[in-house]
Length: 301
Image (cartoon, rainbow, N blue to C red; front, side, top):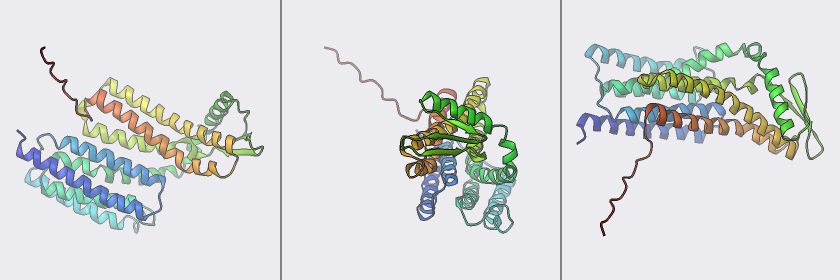
């Protein structure tokens, strides 16, 4: 028998999830796609999955004073979503970042009013992520000198991998060059954006979301797994560079290579996130995403 308040929390989480993705999906379909939109959608997917999972348990409740504070916080979050651009905290034009601020604020208000304490924190995580990325962007304005020591290593690793594929590549500073099968030279400039620093930032946000929602799962094994996650995120970026290089080698320096450069990054990174967090949730936390079917009883003959 399902406890009524558990059923209510789960139904509320499902309705909220549908509402969020209707809003986010409509925004994405009407706006020009960008890599940051993929990041934001990934954070919302993870947030909603955590909310659906937590809503299956008996929800915690706020005290009266806590509820008033949470409702005030939700109102301030909604207001901030409208003034973040004028204040210079986020940049125009209006993007999925500002929409995430608004949706998170509305979510805090909704679950504050419903008095589901266990759902109020997860629904605010996209707000924390956007604010964190804004602060990260302020920091990353100095990324050129921060990532400068990494670029030579990535250039050297890229050349080594291309040589393994039988492609004779050379470097001049941060530029990797080789001759394509079409006979045209291909020049790839490895700059700060190619270091995968944004992917590492996104992965860090997902780590904070999971660890804050499943604090009991933190152990030596989880720390090792997260370390592997960072290494995998770095090499997912190396795979992106390699695929871009191979497309240039086989098809020349224009045309397909431009499309591969635009799309391969989010494809590889998304696949890595899915694989890593699926393993982490199923092996470390013990979450089952698929119902196990009981074996049929054998009939006596």
